[in-house]
Image (cartoon, rainbow, N blue to C red; front, side):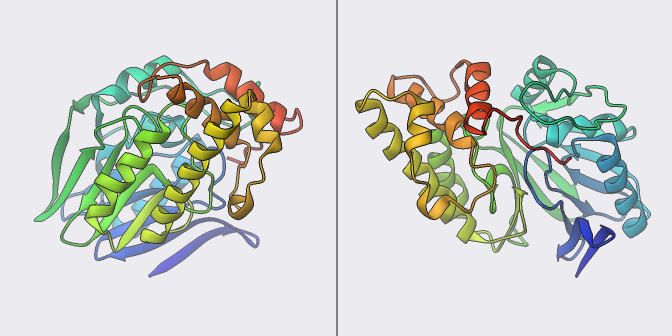
Length: 312
């Protein structure tokens, strides 16, 4: 079952019951700060996987849960610390907020939402940072009545240093967070190219999920994992050649033909990904600190000097 929430002809969200009582809430077009969430319905309440970036989008999501279930959200799981998945936490006033322990400090370090100078201006609304207050190191299990939901830290830096996935083994459904972008360019600036490959091959692929709710983009299957792996290996090979040629990440990005990946949204992410790949070629560990501001500024330069487009 799928239903769309629209203004005029423009879909604002698509709600899909991917398995009995398990809903994906996908927000087109899945570009900067426009993420996916989902919710699991039990007899006494709801588990939400992630919040949204803005007050307006999060309130609309909560209204959708209320209209479909009539039940309160008792638990909110954050798959990682990025604000598109967490800024709306503050609106889940009755929920226990859960995340991997690294997400709490990372969320507090990032602070409140801001657009400039890297993104076009966003109407964030009345948002205060609300970090998780129940954290775990490796894995916890949530129960939705008698349905098992495993919240697993992926074990290494990938999209960030605190990524988790929500896996429902009895249903073959995976909420991947931003380990998987479907139709969008993967983004590893705060994570690891090699780590993301490791997670996709050693953590996600062995599960063989029938249904993946990605962090961005439409509900999908393993084909999105295959595309992500192909892109990440392309980044590694491109970085090795460019570094050997003495090119900076920005120079290399400008000279690179994206080929089969040209149709992915947010292509400027190649610059940030190359910054991360160069650091790893220099021996940096997955998730090691690099100059994020320099990389983001070069992404803007790659984008013709214009702030990165955000329609959240």
